[in-house]
Figure (spheres, rainbow, N blue to C red):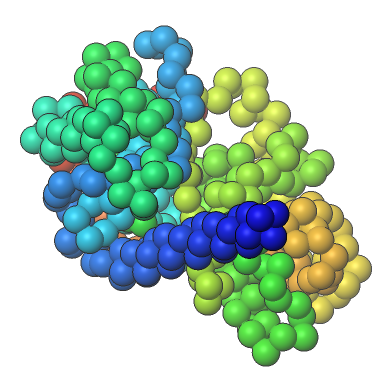
Amino acid sequence: VDRLKKEKQELNDEYKLLKEHAVKLEKMEFFARAAAISWDELTKLAKISDVWKAGIKTVRQPGEGNESRPFFVKVSDGIAVLKFMPKGCSAPVQIADEILRLFGVRTPRLRFILPADEEIATIRAGMERLQATINEQRMTEMMKTLDVEKVDACLEALSQLGRGGFEAVMVLEYVKAGRIDDQLRSFDSHDEGFANVEKLLEVMGEMLVADLLIYNLDRFSLPGVWDHPGNYGNILATSSLKAVSVDHQVFSDVPAATHAINLPKVEDVLRRLASADLANTGETARLQPIASMLHAICGDRFAGAEAYIIFGALKGIALAANFPRPWNPADAEPGLWAYLHQWQREWAVKYPTLPFVDDAAF
């Protein structure tokens, strides 16, 4: 009897593992299909049938600012990422996105849904259906991992839209990618694919200059320049090591005193980058913040590879310094400002109810 009980337990354990593996394969197959779905097919949200992974992190009182994490939702045959935008944050995100794209940095495509748009009703109806499904306990194997709190949090955020809480819902393209530090762990400088690593590090350099330009100071850690540990979860890398920037925005609400302290440091970094002699190891050694940044991402495995980041930064500086004519040669204003002013006019037409960034710091 004991032997039969033991065999039964082993069979149950094996069945459980096979069941979990089957669900995992189902999810992997779905993600592969969803990642390939075109953005055009997600420009109007259809029936929402699942939501997972993250929810509202912090909802403060109106006027104090709100923070949110994205919801990953299954929509028809694809995945969309929904993020509830705090008041005044939509334009800074879109501006940062536009500028990063000018630098050649890939970002997930995005759009905004306003509180009065019909799609809000679609999202709310989808969440209410999910809530009813959970309550009736009619869940498939794939939905058993569904977190009830995610649906409740999404409905709560929807109730705050246009009422002093969130001003819009941002819809983001789903990009199948992982954190840059996780992706780089499988490479070393002797791999055949190291050329992809070099290109990735170059794009990081361009991203760094773009971040300095838009004052997005929470992504990179530059010891001795500003005190921030860095958030490398905001740099994704695909399986082929293509860099993707996420969670970026223009930080224009920084106190004037902080600007006065930080901006000379930013200028100093850019000057050191611009004057770097990549063939002179003594010169690159002066750029310790870049070496420290690289070490924070991938340890000692790419020691000396900061030259690739610096090379990308030089390309970014050249682009920023000549921001000028790519879009409108006839415009009398300096290039970047002409671009932003033109963009501001288009923003006012497209999203008349969403405020643009308009303060001295910006």
